[in-house]
Image (cartoon, rainbow, N blue to C red; front, side, top):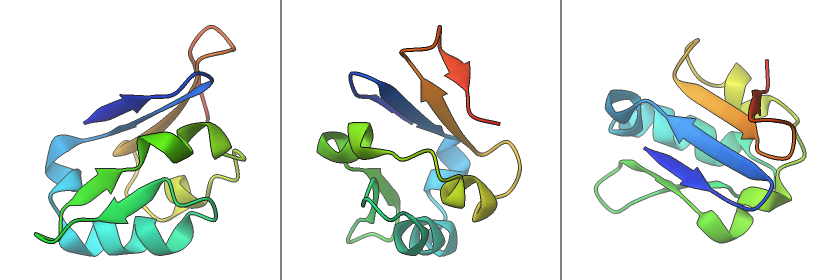
Length: 81
């Protein structure tokens, strides 16, 4: 799954997005509420909050390597590492 704002895009592996535990961790970790957990437990991206991203890396730290990518659209699509 991927969602694009004006400045920031977030991409999450589809299988990881279906994991209720990961969805809970990401929802709790993000200080600007980019992530939410749906009624079915799956991860949802809150598009209206994408450009609020402060590049804190908390979502990357809360997820297994390679499952979440934060993409800086304003910087030639550089991926936050």
